[in-house]
Every structure is written in structure tokens, then in C-alpha cells.
Image (tube, rainbow, N blue to C red):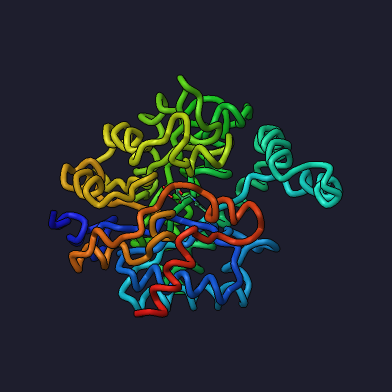
Amino acid sequence: MMYETILSPIHYGGMQLKNRIIFAPTTFGLSDEEYLAKIRAIAQGGCAMIIVGDVPVGKSRFEKSLFDAKGFAFYQQVVKIAHDADCKVCAQLHQSDSNLLAMFKYIPGLLLKKITPDQLREKLNAEVAPYITNMSQRKIHEIISGFGKAAALAKQAGFDMVQVHGDRMCGSFSSAIFNHRTDEYGGSAENRARFAVEAVSAVHAAVPGMPIDYKLAVRQENPHFGNAGVVEEELPVFVPLLEQAGVTSFHVTLANHSALENTIPPADHPYFSQPGCFLKFCDEVRQYTDLPICGVGGLNDPDLVEQQLASGRIQCAAMSRQLLADPDWVNKLKNGQAEQIHRCLRCNKKCLGGLMAHQGTRCVYDALREKEAKNA
Ligand SMILES: Cc1cc2nc3c(=O)[nH]c(=O)nc-3n(C[C@H](O)[C@H](O)[C@H](O)COP(=O)(O)O)c2cc1C
């Protein structure tokens, strides 16, 4: 198989991508040095664009922020590493929906190991509805304007694109499960879309002409998966509004706020075990827009990815875990070495598992790859 669609360029939201493979937003929890080395390997491995995960839309104590000099300089370094490898870079702009004040009261319990990180997640999820529902309009407007400011800073730092993270706070406002407001930000689907739509509008106004990707987190009932994000039935309301606000492409996946194992499903997941498990959500989104759509979720088999792109079902394929397992996925296809790809096992042991254990995002193939690099 020639993989000609995978390797063909595409006009993606007003920007040219050299092929169809995008590194999905991924949090690493590594030292700067290790993180930059990973980004370098992924960029040099041939993918067309890297989406840098979790870039906050304000100052942050926990994440690298564009709003302080050190964070800004760090992102400039990331951009340069990608550009040197002829790889585009996109900043995933996000606002956490964890109520930090609520979180502080759990820290002693966590430190004393009286509650586990999983229990903490559960407790924080329980705080989301009151946090979203009771947020003042002043705070809402402040966060929305933060999206615009962050986009302007991202452009200044050299990013080629921004992605508005449609999970997290945008997703919580979107969801009737969390959003019980009675003002114009709650109630009808159109009102629940308002926060996300205004965030996109703020980005569009701040960086006119810059492509805007939207990570559209879709949740489903029957069986129930995902609590934040847009329920399938409301896509016809959300998708056109987001497009009108300035979105130029959609990155479609399952919504979060249940367990991370659902949005990052392992191969033995009871429901989303199949490669391409979230592509059905792309089909639904396709009914309401002609914009390019990027699929994600267990897309690691070159033949499957080629088929999905060639049929026009998706325009780009994003992968996180596969490029952690083998950053050279694209180069190996180019060089006719598809059979030498280290196939992601979707075991989640050292990527999600590593991140959760505070050991950083790694991969069970790391040792093997290091050995290969030494022998090369
Ligand atoms: C370790 C790890 C960290 C992730 N961090 C983020 C993140 O910061 N933002 C985000 O939107 N998605 C994040 N994701 C989800 C991925 O972008 C992707 O949607 C998911 O892993 C499914 O794709 P895959 O099967 O190619 O890994 C992360 C995934 C992993 C494995």
C-alpha cells in the first residue's frame, strides 16, 4: 500500500499541512529538557503539526503560561524546534474547570494518603456543577477575554494555529449535566453554547486570519459516556454556531469527566476498544459542517488511517499514543518501512499510567527505541 492520502498535503483551515498526520494534544509532566527532546523527536518524525496540550488562558502556577516571560520563552523554544523540522505548531488554549479553592481543602487528605488521586478526581468532578452554575458574569467575561489574549500571545510566540479546548470549561458550560445556570449562559442548547462561542469569537477578534481549531468533545447516552461536552442530539445547534464564530476546523472526540480511560481508551476497554473508536462522532459532526475534520482515538494502523482519509470520512488523523510509541510513524511510511513501526499497544501503562503516577508520560517502547538509536 502506498499511503498516498496520508502523505498528501491539505489546506487545513487556511493553512497548508504537508501531510495528514497531527500529534494530538498531550500533557507530558516531564522536565523541560525531556519534554523538548520528545517534541523534537515527534517533529522530526514527519508529522505535519504538533498540538501543544493545555496552554492556559491566563497566568498559572501549575502549567507553562504564555502570560509570563519564562513560559512565553519556553513556548518560543517549542515553536522553533517544530519549525526547524518543517512541522507546524498549534497551541491548545484551555481553561480548567476545577475549582481551585475547592481543591485546596482536599490537599491535606491527599498528602496524608487518606484519599487517592482517583477519589480526588471524583470529588473535583462533583464541584464542577456548582462552580459553573454559580460563576459570576464578571468572571466569565474575564476568562473569555483571556482566550483572546492567549491567542494573541500564541501568535506572537510563533504558533501557526490555536485550538480552543472544547472540553474543560467550554465543555462544562456546554453540558446540561454541569451547567444549571438560569441566565443567558445556561438553559437552552444555544445558551449553553454561548461560553464556547464567545471564547472562539474572542480568539477570532484577537488574531483575525489565524486558523482556529475546535476540540469538539461529544458525549453520548445509551450507553452513557462523557459528562462534559456536547451531547449528540445538540450538535446541530453547536456546530453551526461555532463555525459562525470563526472555527476553521474541528478535532472531534469523546467528552471527558467520567474517567480518563474512556477518552484515552486501552485496547481492553469495554466499549471503545476498537481502533478509530470515535470516528462515528466525526460522521455526526460532518452532517452540520463542510469544514475539515480531524479524527482521533486508536488511529495507529496505517492501512486503516489511509482508508479513513481516502474515503473523505476525515481530513486529518491525530494520534497521541502512537507517536509516543514511535515518533517516526510518518517517516517509516514514506520510506516504505511500515512493517518496522512500533505499534502502539494501547496498554496505557507508561503514557497515561506514567502521567498519573507522576513519573511523566512515557512508553513501554522507550527502552527498545533507545537501544535502536544507539545501534544505528
Ligand atoms: C498521556 C496523555 C496526555 C494527554 N493530554 C491531553 C491534553 O493535555 N489535552 C487534550 O486535549 N488531550 C490529551 N490527551 C488525549 C489525546 O489527545 C487523545 O485524544 C487520546 O489519547 C486518544 O488518542 P490516541 O488513541 O491516539 O492516543 C492525552 C492523552 C495521553 C495518552
